[in-house]
Amino acid sequence: MTLDDLSPFNPWWEDKQDPHIATLSKYEITVTPSWIKDISLTPHFLNVISGPKCVGKTTGIKLLIADLLKRVGTEDVLYVNCEALLDPISLRITLEEYLKKHKEAHIFIDEISAIKGLWDVLRHLIDGDLMSYSSVVLTTSNAQVLGNILSKKRKVINIRVLPMSFPEFIEVHGITEYKSRYDDVMMLFGKYLTTGGFLGAINGVPLENIIREYVVEIIRAGKNPSIMRNVVASLINSMPPPISFRGLAKNMPKYSYKLVQDYLETLRGLYVIDYAYLKEGGDVYYKRERKVFFRDPLLMRIFSFLSGVKPLESVIYENIVQEHVYRALGEVYYYKDSYEIDVMAGEFKLGIKAGKPKTRYPKGVTVLDKEDLPIFLLELFR
Image (cartoon, rainbow, N blue to C red; front, side, top):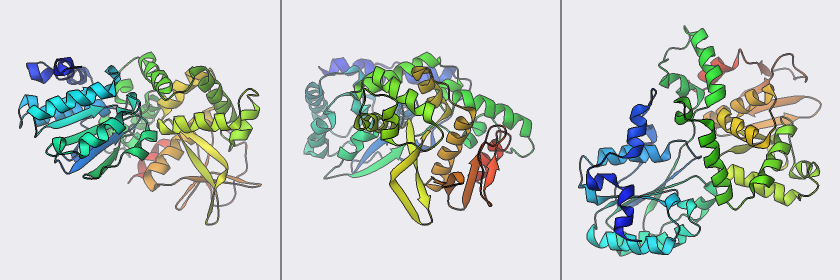
């Protein structure tokens, strides 16, 4: 690999338009991500941007680069797409060659989890003298690599990028005062159930394109897509009740509960799912059965398609509430004995239903159905 090999990733070197910016300009609905303001372009910081595939990490840093190019020389900005590379050693050698010519550079390395062992190769370069005058921005779609990202000489800025919440979703559709526009809000909620908070999906990017990205990421994480399909099918069939890894494994005699746990933790690392734990009084039981929720309606739709299992309508609604409560309060739990509380956090005790409730809720629980959900989600962040 040589610097010439990196030219296609850096069209500004030849005064060409960046393809991500070109694509964004064709979107009917666009937004400049607020998180790019949190990136530090000084050499004292290492910026690590994480979040699910197709959420807009690359587009965000390309917008930042476009603004940066107004102030610095075009050759002082380097972007590397690791998904198009294979060899971490040759990348390191090429970066060293580049840094000898451009000591005060701004370096963006996209999807570092795409190359196994890349962080170990980059670590010494980032902490070494050769890169001491350069700013560094890394992105990853796999949170499981973040435990290894530490720097001896730089303060690490961790930025998490997630799909738009429903309040953000209606805002990009031009609704800022929702109380007088209930019909519009309900219409947009129906759209949100289909596209989730992914800007590409909102603008009509085909679902199969997004699905392909997730299949590639599963393979890249070292997991068998066929096994993942079976694990997710068992999971969706078991929702919304709390599940255990052993319980899911019983539905798949060929698989151990350790394997099931490993595959679900991989999805968790890819920001596809997360867990709500049992809470009784002030105690949280992390080793008991947990409720699993998909972190965006589009992610549930994708993995429903891959697994061939359609989720219950009530599961979709409950997952949306769990994710929004988690984002708003930083925690989400459930409670279950003879009664059940679907979602608990802070002062909230919520039951989620579609149609007539099939379970009994104790006194003090607020029961939400599809008609209640949009306004609840909007008021949650006020």
